[in-house]
Length: 400
Image: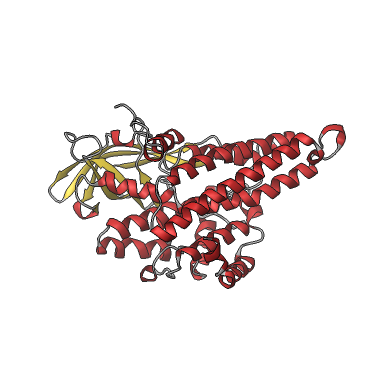
């Protein structure tokens, strides 16, 4: 894969120049302590800027206002955005990745024409309605019911951990349509209009003091049959494909951001007093720790390179995406914890929230608290270990 990327040196230079000219130099200062509404407006403006430059959705086809970039060019764009410490479009994550991938794979032409232009042209926000209070890691145990009554499904149930549902116009919803079927065989996939009567959204304040996650309460919510994705009871298969996408190429940018953040950690060690009043970086133990993180980040990139090479040559990622997700999430947690400890009280003080922040922003207390979300999202680390044991190591399946 290295050879393929080296052949794109000119393209890389163009993307790097675009970032130099368009990434707002003061965005961190503007977003530090910003309100929810201010952060949302900033993300909409940044999305429009990226769209104008053809970089908002590099994986989208030109038919839907993408640029038909090659997979290798998508990798370069992700690397350069991370290197430029560009703001993150976290509010539009589901819209740009899950919704696009879902509609292109399993949606109808009418569904694509209604929803895809609205995402890039109007900044339409989507959320996910997958997890439930008693069906998080074991998603196949979900209890939300969808009963067909003529031309609509009537849905009742509860969802949790729906990111940015308070802003969302639509929701990717899983609901049980055949309660008599085996638990993963009776689930269907729907597009839910969040303005439908009976939908209630309650934001959750997380450990990092953000209101990012939400609970959804659905009472006699009617979804038109034409808003079903795929055939009835095929939702489990379709959803698994969506989660696989989230764990593959989307890890590239966070890994690159971690590589950039390593040098921020080195600078912190240079400016923090260590034993005897000398800079902490002169302590043998600190230098050993820094070397260890450097090696682990290099290992992460090697794992990602291997996966990307497989995707370029074979057209898809296998269970190795679970290995990378598990490795990254635990490395991120240890890395940000170490930085918060190394800096002492100044890096452990409660800092103002930073909107649109990279996964490692250099506000170490904020980064450490937020790192825990990576051990849960896209399938918990416990689920990833099951996938690795069964599909990579060939161990017996977990008993029912």
